[in-house]
Length: 563
Picture 1 (cartoon, rainbow, N blue to C red):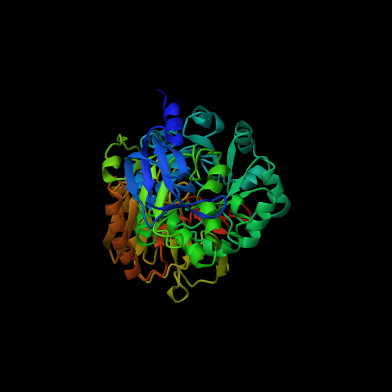
Picture 2: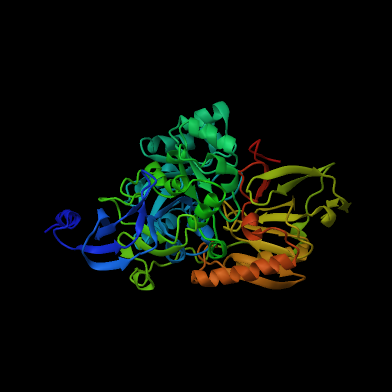
């Protein structure tokens, strides 16, 4: 007998279901009702609801509510600082049964090797990891990446069973001005899914961007911006990451009327934030506490996201749908107690059945050694451009200050919270090194450094002391990448991220606990940012307004040019 016939027989009730969830209620995302009755499963498929069923195995969920598994519609697993297998183990217990990832970070370091690593990993995770092919490697001509992925290098992956389409097209100026490389990629993926990335893009330029067939955006930071994009046919992915926190600003658009055009995503979220607050479950309970209707936010967390990305088999608890289910204490609390992924109860024993995947990029940090003299910013006439950090946002301001100088070299200004920032090319390509100034970290001494530096992932270091900045940067080479904190010549905290300089080989629990030590060490330097390391990682991101820094120099993002 075929599995299809089994599903029919078990749904009708001729034979016992493989598994029955009994005693609870499920949240119907069509009507908004809480419906009593058993939920019958045959293998990876729901086959019965709204009745009573016999099961070979039963799980009593009395007093609990079953909701469809959550879908993170846009994220970079690399930003969790752990491998895909450890990310699987970290977030699946929070009810994340589908993750749509863009391996953009590892692709910028390792190119096709990084994409192959993610695709191989996606075949062995318990959650369903889907992959978008990184569209902008390198992201711009204003930085040095470790690899380049023109369209001909993407096409061999297009028909992989885990590939959905083309990932966030962040080079929106390239789209609007018809850059030949951008056009080749857009042409190749017409008719498929093309993910968007268009911060602050409005009006006629937005129209042109959307005319290229781009359908989603996760960069909205105001309700007004989101509404314009929804009116123009975009599906808005409401984001709440470790740095980019847009949920509160977008609460006004999360309504029952608009929920079919919304989804949820984290983009970049580390294990410490996940442990302390949660993942999409955190977004759901936060939204409801702010007055959002449960139906609207639960739709955005599952069925609406599934439809936006063409995943037609999931997002509802109904016969014939994929058995991705989270059992929660209440709709408002959204405390996930049990998870079923493709009909399998998520346990440590289930994770133990996975096939390991060998890591890649263990020798990717090839930066030259530096000394304190490398961190002396060049002389300027008049005012100096300073990157203005906005806590909780990856958008930065272009600020101008008159800085005191010594022998013609501008100096830090601790009274105004202006310190040094530098980016060092680490792929062994050209040895570039650029210096500048940043305001908003709060450091009073020392330095912090990272090989996580979106999107090209060169070494980025901020600090008060050039000596400490040099020690921090050199230490990153010694540990094959990661985060480092230096205080008066001494390394006070560090984590090694040897997989492409982005991910740890350790369990997520180890990464979580080490991040606590790193955060404490950064706070000891005076840091006032809740997440200083990921905030640091976005300083070299020249596709996000307004002022950034790359290994080539300070970047005026609005002009899309080096200063």
